[in-house]
Amino acid sequence: MNYKNKVILITGASSGIGRATALALAKFQNKIILTARRESLLEQVSQEIIKQGSECITYVGDGRDEAHAEFVVQEIVKKFGKIDIALLNIGIGPPSNTLTASAKTILDCMNINYGSLINFYVPLIRQMKKQKDTCMISHMNSLATYFGIPMQGDYTASKGAARLFLETARMELEHFGIKHIRIQTLHPGFVDTEAVKNDGIPAPNQISEEEAASFILKGFRKEWKENRFPFGTSFATRIGRIVPLWLRTKILLAETPKNF
Ligand SMILES: NC(=O)c1ccc[n+]([C@@H]2O[C@H](COP(=O)([O-])OP(=O)(O)OC[C@H]3O[C@@H](n4cnc5c(N)ncnc54)[C@H](OP(=O)(O)O)[C@@H]3O)[C@@H](O)[C@H]2O)c1
Image (cartoon, rainbow, N blue to C red; front, side, top):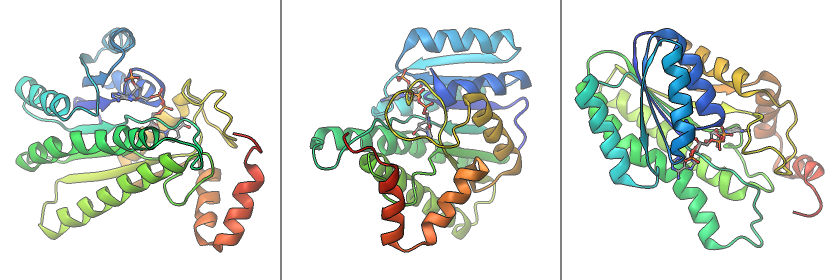
C-alpha cells in the first residue's frame, strides 16, 4: 500500500522502532498521529516530523486504557475523516523468568502487548469497515512469536496471542467479503533500541532502528500479511519451527545465560 499523503496512526512512537518508522514516513507528506506516555519525547518526534514536511498530532496516553484508544481513533476521524494506516507498535519485552516472575509482571506484559493491541483494534476495525479505500492495520509482533524462548516467556505468550487474533481477523474479513482492509503483522528479529540495550538477552544478527523502519515501509508497499525480517533471523526461526522440540530446546538453551 502506498504511504504518501496518508493519515497514519502510530502507537508507541516516542522511541525505538515506532519513532524511527514515524520519521521515515515523515518524508512523504503524511498526516501522522503519534501516541505514547512520555510527552516530551513525543513532542520531539513531532517537531522532527513537521520539519520534514508532514503534519503531526500527538496524544499522550496509556495503551492499556480502552478509553484512551477509543478517544484517539475518534479524534483522528473527526479531524481527517479516515485512517489509512495504523501501526500498532506498543510493546515491552524485558527479560523474565517463568520460575520467579510475579503474576502481576506476567499479566502486565500481556496487558501492554496484547491488551493495547485490542484496545486500538476494536475502534479501528469499526472505523475502517466504514471506509471504502484500501487501509491497513499493521501490528508490531516479533519473530519471538512462534515458540517459547527462555527469558521471554511472558513476551512470547503475548505476541503469540496477538498473532493468532489477527490471523483470525484476516480470515473473517475474507469470510465476510470485506476486501479493502489489510491486516499485517510485523516480525522483526533483534533491533538495537534503548529498550533492549544491556538487557542480557543474546541478540544475534541485530539491526538498527532505521533498518527496521525501512523493512517496515517495504512491507507496507508489498502488503505482506506477515513481514518477517531480517532474512538470517527469519530463516533461523523458520528452521526452529520445524525441528523437533528436543532439538529446539537444546539450541535455545545453549544461548541462554546461566543466571538471569
Ligand atoms: N527491539 C527489538 O529487538 C524488538 C524486536 C521485535 C519486536 N519488537 C517490538 O517492537 C515494538 C517497539 O519496541 P522497541 O524496541 O522500539 O522499544 P521502545 O523504544 O521501548 O518502544 C516501545 C514504545 O511503546 C510505548 N509504550 C510502552 N508501554 C506503553 C503503554 N503502556 N502505553 C502506551 N505506550 C506504551 C513506549 O512509549 P512510552 O514509554 O513513552 O509510553 C514506546 O514508544 C514493541 O512492540 C516490541 O515488542 C522489538
